[in-house]
Each structure stands twice: as structure tokens, then as C-alpha cells.
Image 1 (cartoon, one colour):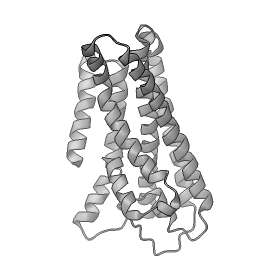
Image 2 (image 1 turned 120 degrees about the vertical axis):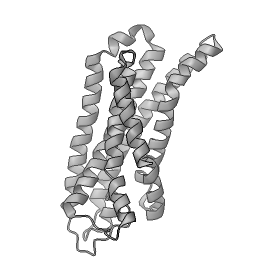
Image 3 (image 1 turned 90 degrees about the vertical axis):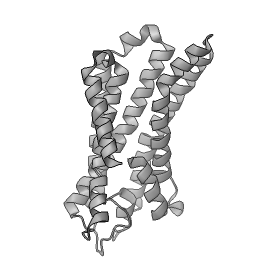
Image 4 (image 1 turned 90 degrees about the horizontal axis):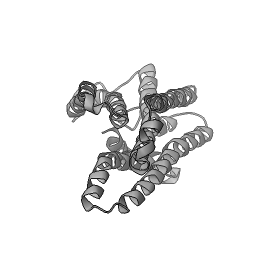
Length: 247
């Protein structure tokens, strides 16, 4: 599955660069998403496979911090990129005459840069916040990688402030982009339903199907993992959610 994810995303990047017909904003964001997915899966799966296939189950303190930073950075960035892709589809379908003017290459690069910069800064703050906590041991993480909530359970101090910070970031950068995506698709569906041709409706909606599938899987897993009240948190259910989120 890991190799399939790597090969598939590399092929998408290569094809969208080589084929001049795919040099459009939609495929620019898709290329960004594929690059992000390569990093997303690589941040967790290789270490998990080592743990499964060998007797070595440990990870260094620095390695754990690096893994959590990479996963948080890419997760937050993906939330923002998916919202940018929804906005691109909204402009293409609902305002086709203004599309080329609004979705210029400068706008595409700006949306992409803001998405990545948001991920870099928030992940840095979050990782620093967690890894400056005291850990008394035994430092055994009940998870297959260094994630936020399992690490907080190992801290020797009250982590209420950290949990609130994680929840606020999750609300802002999972829920808000998700609401922007929902709003975009409400407008898209309204425009599609007004089209006179059934064939035109199907063709237009087909350009959004793959994006909707990714949004459903990614946000469904993210909300189930990070926006549940603490009383409903369980390690086993979180592992299942994160497996879905990672793939």
C-alpha cells in the first residue's frame, strides 16, 4: 500500500508537469496535494513497518519530535489545500467568465504558499509546546507513531492547556476549512442543478468527485480523531482513524 501510494503520487506529479494540457490551476493544486501525500505517508509508514518487522520498537526523542512535526505540518497544510481546491472548483463552475482572471497563477501560488506557511508555523508551535513538557517515563506510546494525544498522556504535569490549544487549532484548521469547502459545494450544486442538460450536469460534477472523496476521508478521520471530547477518546479507535487519515 505504501509503495502504491508513492508510485501513484509520483506519476501524478510527473504527468501534470509533462503534459501541457494539464497546466491549469486545478492540476497545480493536485500536484501540490500529491507532493504533500508523499511526505504524509513517509512521515509515519516506514517507521511503522520497521516496528512491525523487527524487534526494535523504539524511537529517539528527536526522532519522535521530528515525526510529530512533519505529520502536523502536512496535516494542517492539507486542510488548507483542500479548501483552496474547493475554491478553485467554485470559481470554475459558478463564475466561469471570471475564472481565468481570479485564478491567475499569482493567486494559485499565493494560496499554495499560505497553506504551506500556515502548516510550518502552527506545527512548529505545537511541537515545541508539547516537547517542552516534562516526561517521567516509562515513555511507551500506545500508538504506531508519535501523535499529539498519546504523547500528552505520558506527560508528568497537567496538560489541560495543551489539550485546549490542540482543540482550538483543530477547530480553526479542520472545521473552518471544512465549512469553506461545504459552502463552496453548496454553491456548486446549486449551479449544476440549474443546468438544462443532464449530460452537462454529469460532466461538470465529475470534475469534483475525486476531490469530494478525499475531503470525506480526510476530514471524517480528522474530526473523529481530534475533535472528539476527551471522555470518548480511546487508543484503539484513534489508531483506526489515523490509519485512514494517513492513507
